[in-house]
Amino acid sequence: MVGRKNNYVVYLKEAEQISDLLAILGAHNQLLKFENVRIIKDLRNRTNRIVNCENANMDKTIISASRQIKDIRLIDEKQGIESLPPKLYELAKLRLENPEATLSELGELLDPPLKKSGINHRFKKIEEIANRLK
Image 1 (cartoon, rainbow, N blue to C red):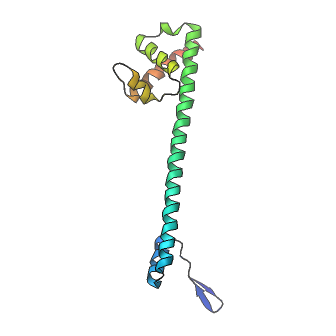
Image 2 (image 1 turned 180 degrees about the vertical axis):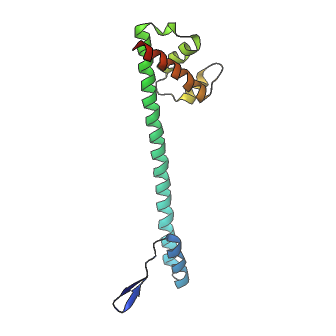
Image 3 (image 1 turned 135 degrees about the vertical axis):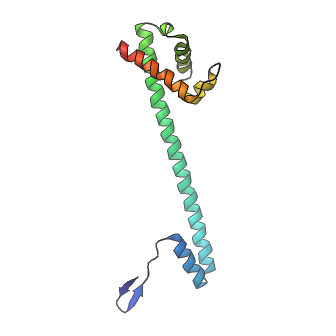
């Protein structure tokens, strides 16, 4: 509440308080319009957050896949990917064949399937081999 000349001005910033005031004043049509705007804004905000999160995850996947492909190609240049242990070789081939795949998707392509953490562990081994060859 702020004093202005001979009057007081009340500022309400929280949506719940504004809704409550409109209800108390009996401004039901305005309350419904206000709530409708709130719902639309909330839906847009949630949608934007989801899209931003998905984009960030996709960016991380692309960056990781690019780094993994670079490591695999370096190993192939220096000694051939066939020189990798069988499990790493199988994963390296899968990554080259599926450059856009997530770790989970690559894991599902293996026989037997492997969880994301197992795939990540194998890529760390591939990265270590590539780093030694640099």
